[in-house]
Length: 286
Image 1: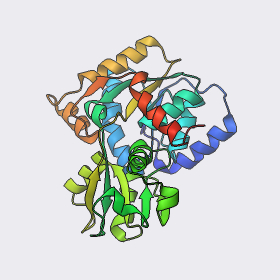
Image 2: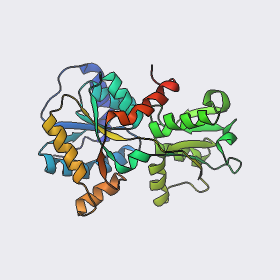
Image 3: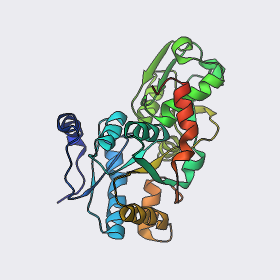
Image 4: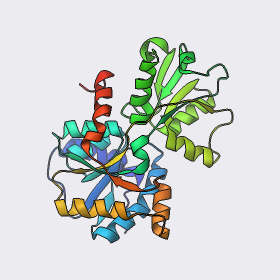
């Protein structure tokens, strides 16, 4: 039986979350989820080899639970419907606050210590952030670190307020959708995760004429977050399994390639303090 729950049941899962409240979930498997920052098919493609590896390394039976949006990924964790989640920096902060500090970030990609966003356009007149005044613009999800929070933060530093200075502000919901919106002319510019941009560029999936005109400074981003109620033994076994991943094995090389990582390193909540400060300053945390 396939352990991966198909993307088609994501909406049903969200309904179950709403109807079940805080009832104790089944303990027959270790459940994980991920923010849907890319298409559901891509998330499942990335998940399967990683799940196979983690099961072999830890002895757990692991089930991937897809969700419809970023908020659902946080709610699934808060309501104990999943044990671990792949979050961006901002969704981790949301999960930490919503769960009463029961969210523990344990592992991140090497690349997540120095992450970046890119601003893209097809308009030849847009060359700097200052040129964005009066344009139509797309962020990704409203809860995205690299597709909304940090781009908004760097826009503010450049003296631009999206609500006042953009002709229209849209939210595509995912990084690849932002590229499609800009490339099709639906909006004049947008911002997204640099890793997704590099992936789409490598695969020749960037619409013709779409280019990067600004790359942000570095910031901390994604991590795997585990619930505090998960045993210390399980937490340690999962952390060690991620740390062992390398390009020296065929399985490791494939997983790291799919995760767009050179390797994994341990992380801690304090690494995301600046993300929380940025979110509060932008009025995205109440």
